[in-house]
Length: 175
Figure 1 (cartoon, rainbow, N blue to C red):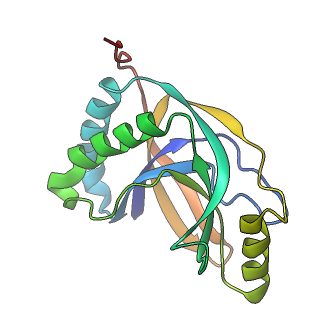
Figure 2 (cartoon, one colour):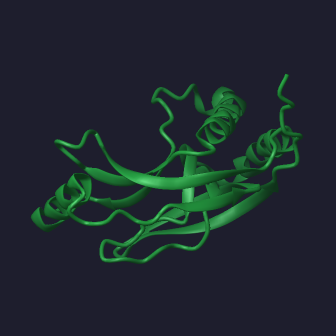
């Protein structure tokens, strides 16, 4: 199974270009044999016990690899960016022995759409230039860590939650 670790960001939004996901990926694992899920779940449960819940704000648009040559258009994270980045680092550290170290920098984002056609390229250019409105900002309470599988079909990826872990850590106390 193709698996990844994510946080839930609520129901999928559907617009002209559709909000493609209802989760924010923290670490993509790739093909994983089902018998490995218990060990992965134990590590994620430990991460969740040490991680406090938090709120993040989805806001603004950007593109990978860059706005001049967009292949993926995304909504960014403003508030809660530090917290979700720390959570991703804990997940990546917990799974690095089994899956190797993560080589790419974590950029918290929610995919809007992939640029696959001239029409997609035009929509991306309009969004990035501000000629088309970006999705409105929204706050999301993050209180669970998810182990998910992704099944590719002719209609796109279908995601299923394999396991869910409540974030129960205490927030850091400012000094």
